[in-house]
Image (cartoon, rainbow, N blue to C red; front, side):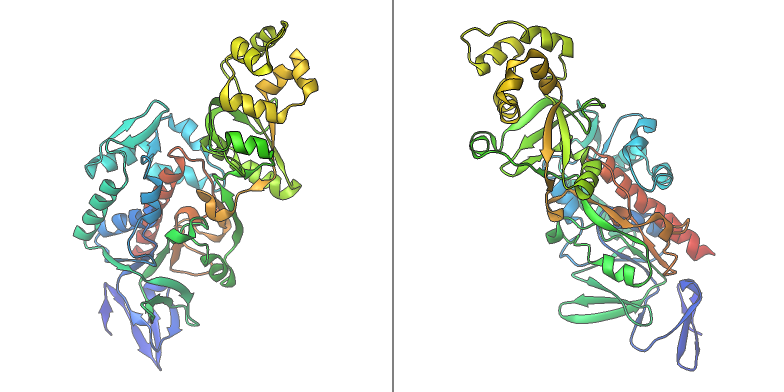
Length: 436
């Protein structure tokens, strides 16, 4: 009876039984027996799980189809790695949708403050920006990732890059393609941390959806999240204003709802940016159901409605509209261009109607931009598919973490924090499972 990492393998009539893999006996011919825990996906969720498990003495091998790990993490941090957010935790947790009772549990395992402490331990001390967002002092993701990977390797974590997961064979073993060759193995346990369906060139292509659905795993369809939208701009508007930012604005999904401060960018095809991303979850769903959605922009969030109306309730005389609005409201540039694009002459002639437009300008969104352009995706493995250890009920011994789960969060540090926290939670779940 050969021993492997404390788990005994029993052979009988050509059958092999792995007690550590939920005591499921499988007919094995070619799979390579692996005493390690296999983590598939070298992004933040997978690496966090590897850190948790290696710290407890478990042998861990991380597999990824790309030449190096953390590629989406690096690209996301190119303009400044927004690691987390400094707002109070009770406000922080309300930024999430889906997995409602699970995300707070993840954040118990690794909340915003703990994440800052973790980064400090890697030599990436953080600071709080004016928006409340938290960044490493070096701003970039690369130094933090290098230190992280070095610490994981020092803890015994092995990396197998250019190993693209193909799914399971007929006996439940993991299948990989690497350099044109096939590798089949059976680890003690497996964590899938494969990301969502955006930025396929960086490895997150959503190909796992069909694999898991075929095994009976409940999976919600992937959809764009933190996404831009198409808008039917006029050619004149695109020529003059495409590529221009809208700053110091507020946005809402309803004209009389709560407007959130933010910024966005006008594009040749529509509109995108942090302010839009924060609302994109509900807007994508509305577009899917109704064929379009309407987003409202307050062009002057610092001006009360009564003040705007008073400023507009005087004659503009011989002034052009652009000069009048600039002098009375300091409304210029892309804000003026957007207002002129969206309102009719009748609205411009009515101080009340124009006030309403300035304070809640409707922008009809035709559709979300393609999923591969989105920063993240919603949908994925549903809550019901997992047990309390984050193990798939339909595939014992296989766990999931990160963006491939059916939850959503805006950018601003919320998305990355929960991705990493889910990896910590899954790592602890795997350890509990193996200790049974």
